Length: 364
Ligand SMILES: *Cc1c(COP(=O)(O)O)cnc(C)c1O
Image 1 (tube, rainbow, N blue to C red):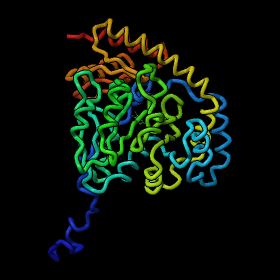
Image 2 (cartoon, rainbow, N blue to C red; image 1 turned 180 degrees about the vertical axis):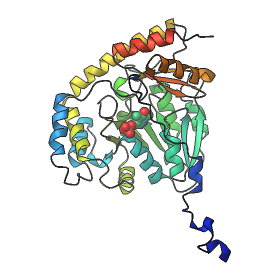
Image 3 (spheres, rainbow, N blue to C red; image 1 turned 90 degrees about the vertical axis):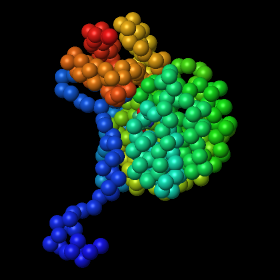
Image 4 (cartoon, rainbow, N blue to C red; image 1 turned 45 degrees about the vertical axis):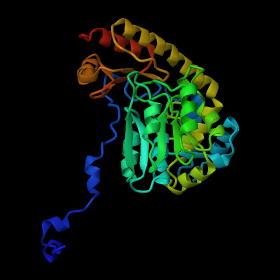
């Protein structure tokens, strides 16, 4: 470096230097909230917290002068009993999106590779780049589903981690038992397969395997779940991972201290106490899902089979046009140009607005 560039008189020397590669980092785009419009853009559950959960949050709020339990002891023990998995194999995080980031940090040295399907959850490429790992995205197949054979072929000696999002966000499609176990049997044992089951509670197809069961049999499988979707706690930020003890230990090392707050920990336990009521809500969403899919197909849309609380409209180059059209009808949906539009299943009246908007959209 020349002495001139170090001179305080040189403006370029006075500029703060953030990582240049962050310029190319895609920002995580949250679903928009538009006043006066219904929001079907973030895969949230439409109802507010149950009274019992709101009470637990209020009780925990009385103690926020204290730091939260760093390792979420009570919630981890509760999950251990619920899932019949030892506590050493469970970790709680500030939403499962934080666990995605911790996973890449914990598994990958700079330049080591992460395989994931694309299009899938937008946090995977971001977490990969933030950790200086290398992304190996593998296109979905023609049915908007993970192409597990192609993902297997994308594994190299540098691969440390594979994300399999099941059901897949944003397409709602699933990988079933036979295909997934064949894949797991073939993945090298030193590569961690992360089954992201953020939407597990909405799955009604018995042929979609339970990731926690797979994690009992495969020592290189880790499952991610969240309280944000079916349990209705998106605003509190709490999720968990179930997997190999040595990976759980490594995840705890890259945890941002105290990031899972006390309200979230208490609300998660209260939600597990109220699981029956909350799963009843999920069943109502699933019934609405069938109705909305049928209506949209009847209106002429291609709608892949979905097992989540949202559906996918592969509108390709008309993606932006549809999201704007829906907004004019007071419905906020989530466009992923140039691939398609993701629509969350909401309350029946909200879904009716979406259906009316879709029926008014001129399909070519
Ligand atoms: C919503 C979502 C998550 C996690 O959300 P958190 O609120 O961070 O727990 C994880 N994976 C997928 C695929 C999701 O859609």
